[in-house]
Length: 83
Image 1 (cartoon, one colour):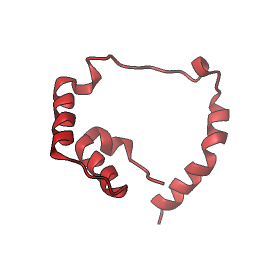
Image 2 (cartoon, one colour):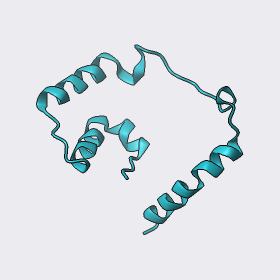
Image 3 (cartoon, one colour):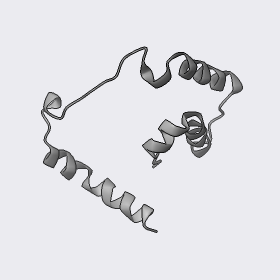
Image 4 (cartoon, rainbow, N blue to C red):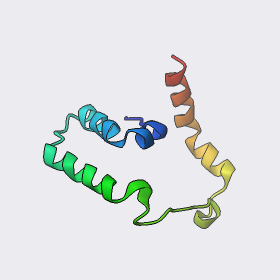
């Protein structure tokens, strides 16, 4: 299982993508990397497609239900962070 820190992804998207490729032993070609850079340059902060806002209500979810569902993974992440 691979865990990515969202804040790191926002700060250094290409660096984080490189880590994903490395983790899964994938070849990140210079052509693919150039396409990623071009996309980010053309659409900084997703202005091209707009910002997406979602609510739990839209998906018929509750905060408690989501917390329960992700409780196991949250506990595992806390263990990893506190090592």
